[in-house]
Length: 393
Image 1: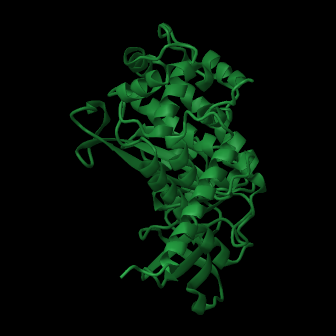
Image 2: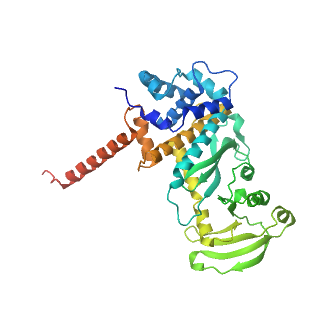
Image 3: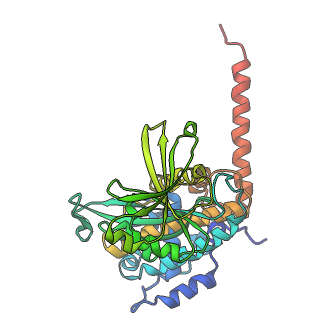
């Protein structure tokens, strides 16, 4: 009887080998790593992410401990610390970026049927960035003048439908956030929700010309004149809903159209926010709620830093760091795809915890998770029964 695929191979089945082969052809290497293909490197990095391995030696030691299962895991070569380190240093990181983009599109299609928040537009993206700190002694190439340390910056566009990344990029830490607006994919009719670091009227004008809508937090130095004003219900936190036109010469040249200015007071944090948008049809509270949902991208950064390996790195080169960050995003997306495809009700955190200790098991993932739930429920029932038993004198 043919053995069942391992838990690890069930998760990596979210990516088709043909798609990976196309990415390899798009980014060939001048000197292939001996005994380790690009797919083997990808599997090893994803294995390290899903099991939270601390080093390349740790990854290789765990894989060699299960040598007979390597073929069932998908490996065709012989991973070692030397060839993994060489591959991370010399194999183009853009290969894993292309793989992540394929997984983002697949996850987006799967979660397209996710229930919509009635307080949000149909297609909405939250755009933000996060600094990933590095050691200056180990990563001198990542020197960040503002903090006098080393770091890289992860830019992410998160779909608020399913809370999955729809686009990402890794840059130097001093790369301005607003320049990302030049390269993000634009969809007509979509909403792009951003913090004030993305306030650049020339680039916002390009979004408006592309037929997209934006909601961005304003800065204090923005000068404007009020064209029209609408009444608001101040019990909801709204303070004003105005149609404005920019006043200074350079801003008016960059964005000659009118803007919508919404001011809302957050009672919980006791802070007043001013939002700018090119959307005049939706109620002001809907746009304010959309901006509040932008916090989901912050939660994504926090989650991926806590549950995946993006704080300690397997290599010191810039290529190795980028490969590891992209492998973390790929691992996250593959788990999310499998979760949706198998209709698993558990959270991603619970799935990762179970997978990390059952990565070599050869049983259906749904059965493994159902078994864990039965054990948890039975232990809870035993605990309740023990609480009902009388104590001995």
